[in-house]
Length: 457
Image (tube, rainbow, N blue to C red; front, top):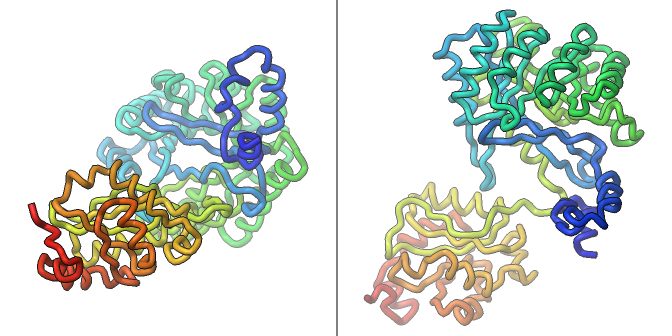
C-alpha cells in the first residue's frame, strides 16, 4: 500500500517493483499499470555519452495539482559557420555555467548545433567537433534531411541520442525515414499553424515515429508573444485536460528568434530573448533554445526554473551530511544546522562572509527550519549522532564539542547524551557566528564555559 501511494503521488517509479517487471505472471498487470501511470505529456530522453536530459513527462497543467516533473531544459546554440575558437568559447560557457542557489547547483543543459551554412558536409564536421568536445547532449538543427543524415552518421548512436530539429510540412517524409533509421527523437515545427502541427504529428505517428517534440513557433514582441503563449497553453491544455494524444508531447520554445526579429542593439535583443524564455518557461515549454552568452541573461532563468519546478508538497531541502567551509584544521569548530535549504544557504553564506574556517554538520530535519524542527521533533539528537559517526569527524578534530543553533538550546542535554560530545549553544542568528567564534572559540574561554580543556591531547 505504501508503494502504491508513492506511485500515485509520482514519488517513485513502477519499475522499482522488480517482481512485476521480471516475472511473466505479472506481465499483463505491468502493462496495464504502465498505461494507467503514463504521463499526459510523453517523456523524451536526450543524451550524450556522459549526460542525460529528460523533457516532458508532465501530468498536470497547474503545479499545485501535483508537481512538475522534468525542469525546462535550456540549450545554447552554436553553428557551422563559427570558427573552432568561437565554438570552444561557447561550449566552455555552457559547460561551466554554474550558480549555487539555496544549496543547489543551477546549470545549463544542452547545445543546439545549427546548420547555418546550408552545407551538409560542413554541418557534419561541426557536429563531430562539438560532440567530441562536450559532455552535453545535443540538438541538431537543420531543415535539410541530407544535413541531418550526415550529422547523425558521425555520432555514437545509440549511446548518444540527439534531438533532431525539425520536421516540417515540406520535409517530414525524409525526416521520418532518418529518425527511424537512427532511432532518435524528432521535433515537429509548424510556426503559426497548430492545425498543421497536429496533422504532422498524426502522420508521423502512423509512420512509426513515436518520440516527438512540438514547436508551434516562437514569435517575439507584444503581438507575437500573445500568439506564442496562447499556442503553448492550448497544446498543454489539450494534452492534460482533454487527453488529446496528438498534443501530448514536449514543447520546444526558441527565444533565439529575438536575435533576428527584434530591432535595436544587442542588449535589446538579449532582453527580449530573456523575457521570452521566462514567459515560455512559465507556459509549459519543456526545452528552450537560446543564443546569448551573458550570465545576466541566464541567471534569472535558472532561478525561476528552480522555483517553478520545486515540489510544492515538500519544503526545499539540501542533502544532509558534512560540509567543509574554508580551510578548517583539527581545532576548528563544528556547527550543526538543519537541512532546510534557506537555513543552509544563510548559515553557509554568513560563515563564508565572516571568513570562518569550520565544519558544518547538516542534520536531516525533513526540510524544516530549525525554529520549527525543534518543537516538531525533527531536529533529532540521534540523527546528529549518526552523522557524527558517518562523517568521520571524530578523526578530523582534536576536540569533542558541537556548536548548535541558539534556537535548539533546549536540546543541548539530549544531544550530549546521544553523541557523547559536549554541546556549546551558539547564537540565535547565523549572522553572529563570526563574532561568536572570535569571542568564544578560544581555549581559555571554552574551558571557562565547559569546565574542561577541550583541546587536551
